[in-house]
Amino acid sequence: MEKQKSIRKNISIISMILIISYSFYLFNNRFLTVQLLNDYKIWNLTTLEYFIPIILLPIGVFNLFFYKKTGWFITNSILMYFLSIVIYQMILEFKWSVLKIETKKHDMIFNSFLSGNGMLLYILQVAVLSTIIIYLNTNEIKSKYIIDDLKKQFITLLLPVLIVILYVYAY
Image (cartoon, rainbow, N blue to C red; front, top):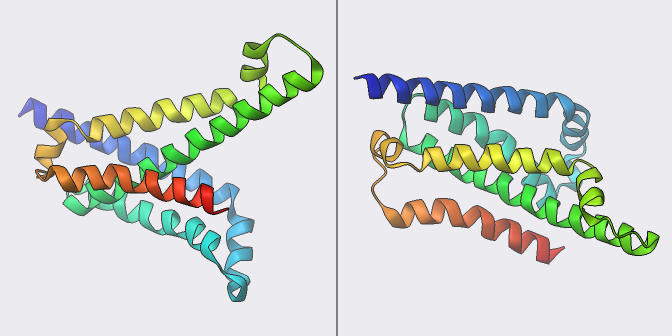
């Protein structure tokens, strides 16, 4: 019984963190969202890439909070998608910091790496997203959501990564 309360508490905390982060994201990107909604005639794949996580994340978190299997799948997929994007941005930031070092002839790669535009923020995002994903994939949580098919779990975690990789190479 105590374990059930602990799982309930952790899922509630994760749901709150995700909804608060989602709210900040929406607030910070409100002008872009309004502009994209107004310019619906020029929508393309990037517009879908922008709106699909915005639509699916609250649905996933809501279902996750109420212990529905779809909530586990949607939330895990969206978090893996975000994690893939953050890792890709970290790689780009690292490449950029190395280019800055080569052009300025400095030997301090570590300082440049950490002083890049938000590199510590990227590291924090990877840590938080990874922790949530790992927690959602523990045996206790999977049994609570009745996730027993390893293929579906693998697809849930791998498909978002493949989408980001294909998207990066397409553009």
